[in-house]
Image 1 (cartoon, rainbow, N blue to C red):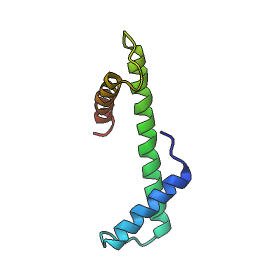
Image 2 (cartoon, rainbow, N blue to C red; image 1 turned 90 degrees about the vertical axis):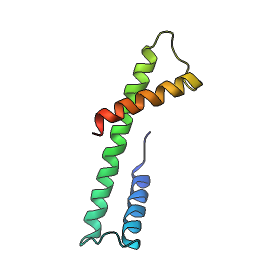
Image 3 (spheres, rainbow, N blue to C red; image 1 turned 45 degrees about the horizontal axis):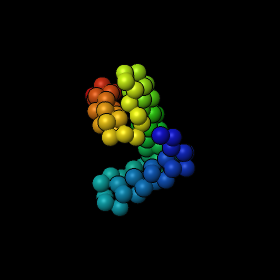
Length: 90
């Protein structure tokens, strides 16, 4: 899932606004905070893309091949994705 820089920036601004409006945190430097949020989001989506590629490769190796979009494929995709995610996000 490729997320554009504009989309990441938009999400980062929404997160910062929500933190500030709900009085959950105060930040001395908004620009630095935005950069930190953006880099965290970029790293998260990068790992999500890696996991997606791993899962799709595993599913393609199954015999007989599963048809992408089928119910069985979706169930297996979700199961394997969760397994791979738990390895990465411990």
